[in-house]
Image (cartoon, rainbow, N blue to C red; front, top):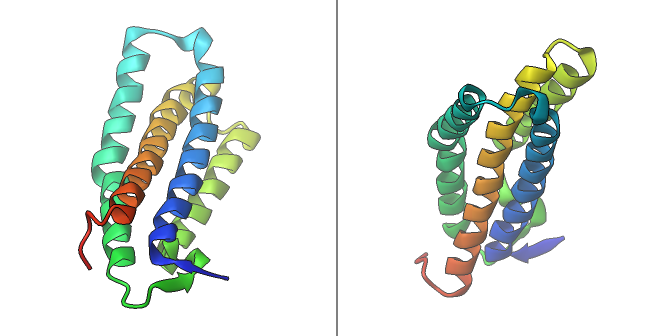
Length: 141
């Protein structure tokens, strides 16, 4: 199924916002017994590292790639390239394994997932902002 290339930004927005919300929800639900200034600081640090080094760059890279497509209609899964899908699959699999195996303590889940989920959620919002800019012709091809 093909969609307009700008719609790929909306698909990325929905995928990352939903993923971020779900991970953030898991972190917040686990947080109550571990709520402290130090843990909040650690969650903010996780957020900042992921946002600055991974997801912020990912949003820029994939937005630029999508906007540069010469054909207006693209396969709907082209909101990411193969490398990004592999990274996403590894992250999902690793996250499920960490939680179900008991390898990561609940304290880690609370702190790490809150920061990671917030960063993923923001990445989704940034893709949404880029979609808005694209439909309002604020991007040039």
